[in-house]
Length: 224
View 1 (cartoon, rainbow, N blue to C red):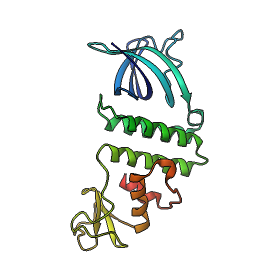
View 2 (cartoon, rainbow, N blue to C red):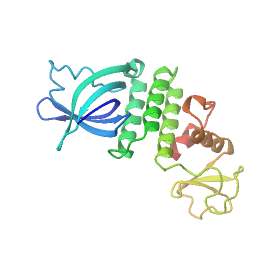
View 3 (cartoon, helix red, strand yellow):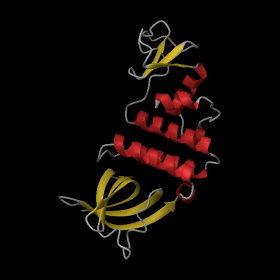
View 4 (tube, one colour):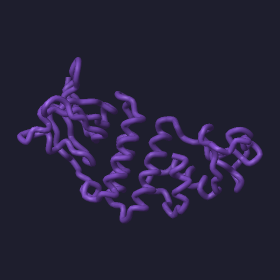
């Protein structure tokens, strides 16, 4: 049985003398682990197409023990990520988290297009700070799709609407008001209302629709 689909490489593992395993998120099959025989050989026809930060047209042969890559052709390359050290580091950070949180076989076209959109915007980003924020936003949107969306509209405990006296509770996974704040503040951080508004935008808007005029990257990083 063969699967013809578009895929994005999340992780690569060396296997045996010249083979490689790949963790790939595909449009039609979700996350799949596949074996590419002789991918590291200098004569390999597959190796040159199985690269990070590319959208790849794949032919995958389903097997009892391993899935195998029967053919690969790069559809689109994000060269600016590959040729910029700052973007490259952020790119691998995003791919690592994607691979960690998504279970094999989970099929969701939305995740594929979200991943593709993030790579495109990261590729086009003008500076490191914009690239950093893009990556944070991508991670939060991914976590939201997977069911880990933080509660940022009202207090986790009393359901009070947000104002300027809110804290983010890392253990609870959302905001708490000043009245419901636990005595132990070790696992909380004060968060401004404008930051909560920004976090709500992340849930409901596409990445390219979000207003990135956002200064408090430190708090956003802590929440992630």
